[in-house]
Length: 276
Image (tube, rainbow, N blue to C red):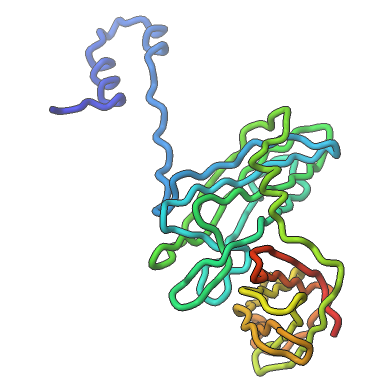
């Protein structure tokens, strides 16, 4: 059986109309909606949840990714093997600042190593601060992520959030509650120059851990390796190598060093800054 698409049927109908047809009739003919862009392999769904406006006037919304069984995506720091996520909000309107709130990641396997990431469903809350509080914020994002099964493939998504609703979304509030617990203590760290950057060792609060990650919040251009966990001078430590684009040692701001730890008990903790 031959199936005629909406556009083909419409073309046949217009061709069959006499030349003297009423223009108003032509304007009233249905027009087929454009087809939605297909999702990349590994995704069952991707959207921006509309969220709500909080008491401070900021918009709270979220990126939702629904992954196919057996697929995964990476946390904000993908380690040695993953593809780093990139969130571009430059297409938004009346947006002064957008802050992501990453839920605690899970251990995911990449070949022979464990990294931090997510299975099944990721709800990534976002706080959008308007440039002009008297006008609404329109949030549009170009989302570039890695999606992995046996191998990792890059994926690009262009999304726009619907207008906010009147009430908080439980899916977003639940994800906000899953952020790692922030500890006020600053762990000790030891910085050693290497030919193309720095080696940084950070004491792990609470001792042994399944996974740890070290980031520089003020230097996104610095590549940071996955953390090796081993014995240190005061217990367990996480050791990473940091390489700058210059390929030379650089000055590290200890206040900008962020440590995320997944202890053996399944929780997640985070510290900001270190004592050198």
